[in-house]
Image 1 (cartoon, one colour):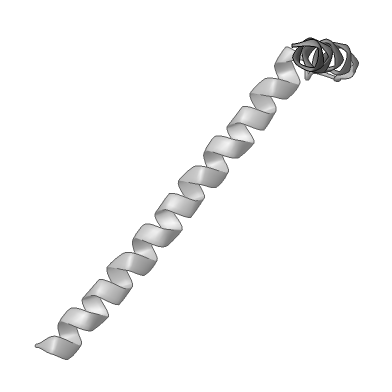
Image 2 (cartoon, helix red, strand yellow; image 1 turned 90 degrees about the vertical axis):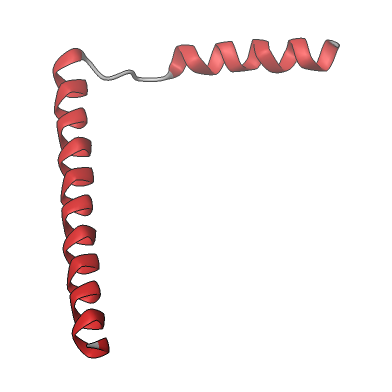
Length: 60
């Protein structure tokens, strides 16, 4: 039990050292992440559609 208490005490000390982003930074980072995910979704959907169309054309 002593080790577990020491672990969480250490976690608490380290969390106080963390540099948390301000509101404006957090908003900017969130927009970048969402835009990146949407780009990846669109890219892989287009690739999937292209490969599916190619396979359908070959099989017909």
